[in-house]
Image (cartoon, rainbow, N blue to C red; front, side, top):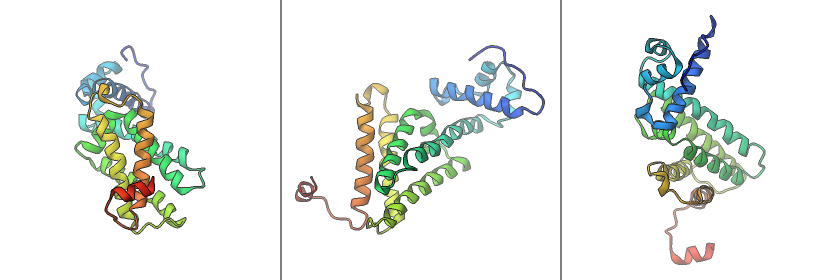
Length: 214
């Protein structure tokens, strides 16, 4: 990541900003939030710290800009996996798979945005995720799935997928299940089936109920 940087031409300040974010993203991936500093980014970009401060007023702003740039790709992924699916429940499932997979691929960014000190930008991002999932739940309702409360069902769904991500990213990699892909699909299936099956009633789980559903 070190070496001479080509000076951005006049009017291309956005190019330098993107270069700084590329460097910051790599530092974050390699060493976590502690490795991402203004000085480290400046050194890797072959510029002075004041040049970085022209684009980011603080380390916190730099970290969140880096995280949110990665998060902006999430919605592209979610649309890509669900857009062409006619079955809204399957679309919801694939959305959950993509969300959990995204979180596991970007653990540092996920922790900082979803579990760290929230900025207004990260709050907006969390709200956008919730509204996206609620739209998918609404599509299930419109198709005839007996959803009593879209908001409550979405909360339960989001709690499940967020929990599936958080359970692993707060552990060392060697503690993760050996088959991560299977974990992702099972967690997504559990989230969708759990949220939708209890959407219209809160039946108490029992052995007989489990055997009937098997």
